[in-house]
Image (cartoon, rainbow, N blue to C red; front, side, top):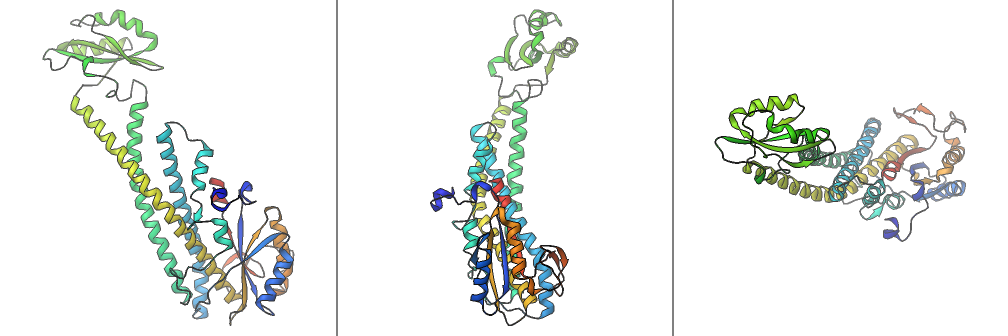
Amino acid sequence: YQRRVHGECPSWWPSLQMEFWLLSAPGAPNRSAARKALDERIREFASTHDLRIPELKVGTLDALVQLSEDLAKFDTFGESVATKVYTFQSDILQTEMEKNSEKSVKSAELKEKLAEMLNIYGRTLDAYLTKFEWDAQKYNGAGFVKDVSSEITQRLSGIEAELKARVQAFNKVKGSLQAIGRKANGSLLIRSLHDVVKPENFVLNSEFLVTLLVVVPRALSQEWLSSYSSLSQLVVPKSSELLSDDNEYCLFNVTVFRKIAQDFRNAAREKKFIVRDFEFVQEDIQAQKAELSTLQSDMSKKMAQSSAWCKSAFSDSFSAWVHLKVLRVFVESVLRYGLPINFETVVVRPQKKYVRTARKTLQQLYAHLDGSVSTSDTGKNVEVAGVGVSHDYHPYVSFTLDITPFLSSA
């Protein structure tokens, strides 16, 4: 998929692991110099990309501190919505592929289909993050940061609400089809027989005669044929024939007089011949076929509609999640570095084998920003003074966005 859209597969694709660091550091002596210093120190271990954040209005310090705590929760919420949408699309694709192939779906086939969903408005996850642009049409880049965060979470809440409704409707139809499938695919002892028997297998509309369906263990089929007429009086001779069989059982019909039907059932049970509780009614068979056809049509319609919705909703929810991450970078940077705004923000993509080395290099580069943390204290879990949230602490602002779960499942 990557090759079809962008001309070649990026080097990270085979590793199926990628995380990005949304990072900020003071723009001293100026932002250009700060960026140059960062690039020179880390270029061997990671690539850096512009992260342009609009200069949002911050409001009061107390409000900003509270928003910092709220954004941590919003961040988790955004990730969960994007993941749920992606998981729903996976369920739809697997159901569709099983329906078309009538066999178990191969993991490679499913992953290939899922990979086609991993794009944000036509760009790969990698391209979207490394070339991030604030979506001013959806989120006011000149507004108060608290209001913008509310806009984003409201959009995510709307996606989640519609997702729940679609999942519920999809699972209801899928459950009904699975129930029918279980009845159709069990052994002859328990499965539905409506698609096995035909009208000519029965004596119909008779006041005195009734046709019974008997399930016989395969090992006892010859015994059945030689003894069924003597199990009771008033059994019609030569009225039994094999209608179907499976690995365990054979299905026979037999015609008897109605008045001795229960006696025949009892006698058959003693010989391990099980008479199924079945009455042939043409209208019931047609009704079941119509119900199955309606459910299959409804399922196909729901899968097509929900699949198209998922592709759009995944772009919207993933984009919203990233915007929340960007807001976190902005808020934490203001709290950490103060006003007026003068910090450089970048997206860092560390090479997989140099993740720890890249962190250590950044720790050394920015150690002067916090004398209380030594260069060996890379990513320790401590309380950030003045911010009021606990997370992996660095002397610079950094939030990780890990897309590995999406790549692994695709």
